[in-house]
Amino acid sequence: MSKTLQAIKGMNDILPDESPAWQTIEDAARVIFEQYGYRFMRTPVVEFTPLFVRGIGEATDVVEKEMYTFEDKLSNESLTLRPEGTAGIVRAAIEHNLTYGKSERLWTTGAMFRHEKPQKGRYRQFYQLDVEALNFAGPDIDAEHIVMLGRLWKALGIEKAVRLKINSIGDIGDRTKYRETLVQYFSRHQEKLDEDSQRRLTVNPLRILDSKNPSMQTMIENAPRMLDLLNEDARAHFETLQTLLTHAGIAFEIDTRLVRGLDYYNRTVFEWVTDQLGSQGTVAGGGRYDGLFQQLGGKPVPACGFAAGIERLVLLLNEVNPTKPKAPLAYVVSQGVAAKVAAWRLAETLRDAGHTIVLNADGGNFKSQLKKADACLARLALILGDDELARQEVTVKWLREEDRAAHPEQEKVDLHVLGDWLNKI
Ligand code: ATP
Ligand code: MG
Image (cartoon, rainbow, N blue to C red):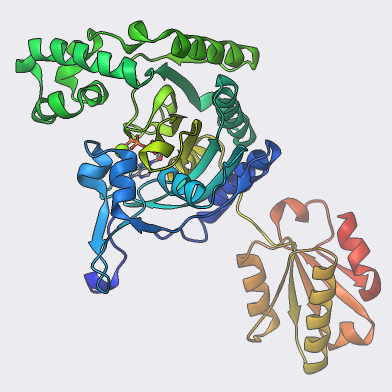
């Protein structure tokens, strides 16, 4: 296959064999988010570029080097494939007055795009579960997000494989002070800064703390801590958050270096991490962004949110608690014109009753139809030939090893009681 007819590197097909794990995660997330009163919404995949530049911040990795930006051929406007979900949701909230005199608990899911080096757990098109709580000021909503994720991990059976890191990066005033303190500190160690960090020293010194460069770790560990510079309100906010988490039975560690990669955060930041996915260990991250509405031209609205990477959750789930492949209850096999019609009707009737039924298509002899029944992992084959039809019955064949031990290999069941019979097994 020529290269230009293949998928783009870092943009994956999610094949049917992989999708049960995806569905396990997406289904559990939907149930849990809605249990907490979060309402679903969607925003477009493409937005005007300035939304992300302003929202996420010019000096972030995402804006500096990861965005898929292009010029619209007709309007000549600069457009960008969304690299994350928050900016679009806040834009929509401002545009449609969603938080006028009220707050909103929202969630969404969809594809995000970042031009990164593809590797395990890091792709160019990837999917996030995204939760945003708009017009909430207190730490109780920050705690709610963390607790809600805790519930999701339990529902997926991966709670032992993840741990929680939290930090507070204070308010804008605190960060200005902290930035100066950091610039002074790092300037004294300039010879140890790598090229990226040299550049960041003036543009965005906080991001130096996020550097993964091993040779800079000791210096970073000894850097002044944001936590020591918090204003009183921010400190109280962070302390209440910790109390709420403790009451909820959620263990956490305070990571004073945790700053997150996007500029819009203030006060609470958190990450759920795992040690089982190498350096792509962050499965979810979020925090408070009280300044973003204003940054994007709206009135000040306090808010917080998080995003979880579905691919990383899939990798973790496959390792810790694999999802069983989905299988239909029965595969309907038939032969003969009249039997085929009856089989069609039978399949529809059983589906009316809520059963998962695959009907053989494209004919074939009994043997080849049974082969297909087996291949789709059906538990039963329901066989309808002219003989069966004449007697108004179905031959039921158990297809799975574990069932064959407990049942006769084949049995006849009256066509009219088959629904009840299936309900009982
Ligand atoms: P990282 O430090 O791993 O680059 P990030 O800080 O850039 O992550 P966020 O922007 O906070 O990530 O996105 C939230 C979550 O989305 C991440 O924790 C991760 O699970 C997932 N994620 C981010 N980038 C990618 C990617 N390129 N491929 C797959 N998942 C991703
Ligand atoms: Mg990143």
